[in-house]
Image (cartoon, rainbow, N blue to C red; front, side, top):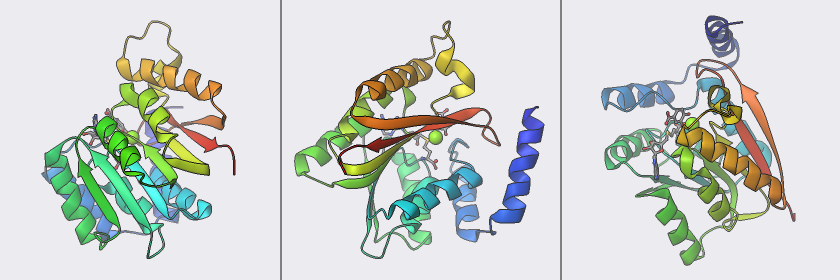
Length: 222
Ligand code: SAH
Ligand code: DHB
Ligand code: MG
């Protein structure tokens, strides 16, 4: 078992199950040309995100960490015509690339991109009485995930879901010797979620993005 095999399987999944998607391919090309790091969700994971939003019937989506808007486009495509997606991005240069990608995807009317630290963005949304959101996708700076999760709980409706990306990080999640802030953040996030009135589980993943995983949180009270 090796990353070469994981890559081949992801390629096979792409060839057999995922249609060629010029809009997404253009978004990735523009992101690379803009110097953005190649850390968007994989095509297979992106399809999963879109399906999850569809299955859940999400009309209001919140995303933390836009990058070039790849996951934003997939999530926004799952929305009905009158649905809305708010996405928070710290880096104004990334946000500019994302804005153009989202416009080219024809989703500018459904997506609101706010530039600034996600922590402040979340506090502003709470102060505005925004939401409630049906789905929150947490995919920004990993060490801040516990705080983002706690604030998100104030914005998600009962029965809503919070999906957290990159929680396993090559197994650093459980490495007692790690001092990687992201891994420590994800460990604290698990401990926190375990104490909340939520149902959560973590699924480990392999593929073109290496060995990682995501946590799916279902907020009780529906
Ligand atoms: N969701 C994207 C990938 C996001 S990568 C996709 O799958 O397509 C993580 C993003 O979080 C980067 O764009 C980074 O600039 C952003 N980020 C880092 N720290 C942040 C912060 N404090 N607030 C908001 N965004 C942040
Ligand atoms: C990183 C961020 C991500 O959202 C991701 O999916 C992979 C890597 C990172 O910051 O390194
Ligand atoms: Mg991610």
